[in-house]
Length: 411
Ligand code: AMP
Image (tube, rainbow, N blue to C red; front, side):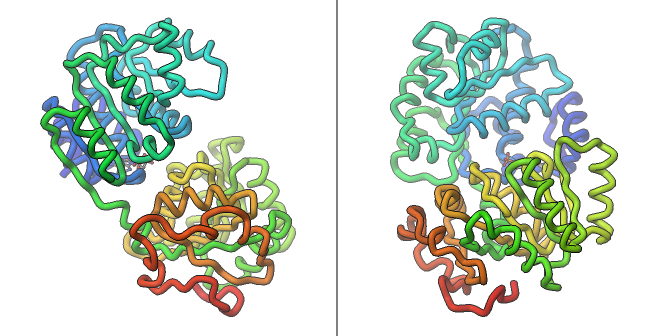
């Protein structure tokens, strides 16, 4: 089934072609027709399934039925990073339409956000606390909202946003289309869904298969100063044939690349500071096998579609657990087996905790020459049992924890 068969209008089709999307994902197939028909929806799906496009596309299409410049769409998201990503999706899929959006979140001055709203926007993507604050100051009004999306509801509740969310919902017009997304449905979340939705269609999709099913996921506890040596030793193993290394910053990507080159490993960095030509060349060399290692930041890695990546190495863990899912999804494409190694220092234990919670799996702890007890014993997930219902899951999939393996046992 193609996007044409979903009856999306020409400007949206054109934007999708530009994004390089050819076929809709299962959640898009299941949701878009009902959303175009104006129904409420409860979607049980994780990040990585294409759920953002599943709601952004039909909302944009329904918006084109009229063009008043008032705030008509509100999307609530738990974190500023997710809100920004959803904002990027509205921009990308709506690039041939005339709507304006803005993102509202806390931790920064409110001035620019208030100005953006007062200049006139059709779409606001917000985290609950700051939005409520601006509503209480009379800077944002929800009286014209026609489309309301609550994204990652389970995470919102985990983060303690329930009261803010309820206050925001109470101020929405009764006549509206509401969409509710959550990766899990514990009772409190499902109760909230029932309060919010009217005769919703229920759509459930399995998490992206690559994440849990076909990627071996291991963690190396290591001090920051030993990460480069550990990376080098891993890369010297022959079965690491095509490796994508992730860092959090461009600066770090450059440093790691220089270190590897100094030690005769063919590596290249790819990030936003590079020219289009340099990025293209780097990718071609990686695809052809001339370069074994590509070092990338999360942003730069978007759109990298290279088959046969044997290993993804998280030199630094992402602070957003969704980024971990995106990162490791780069390996194990098209049914192939893949491996993801994550380096975790004491400072990164909280990130690891968030990741294990999102993927509902404990990463296998690898023993190695640079093992750091300090990193392993730092307060974090290792001190606590695995997330709900998942105890022993690693074992059932053949993972053994803390075993005395030989260094760098083959994965
Ligand atoms: P999401 O679950 O919304 O975070 O989307 C996960 C990733 O899949 C994003 O990087 C999207 O750009 C990408 N994506 C969404 N829909 C499609 C599609 N139909 N074809 C290819 N990639 C897609």
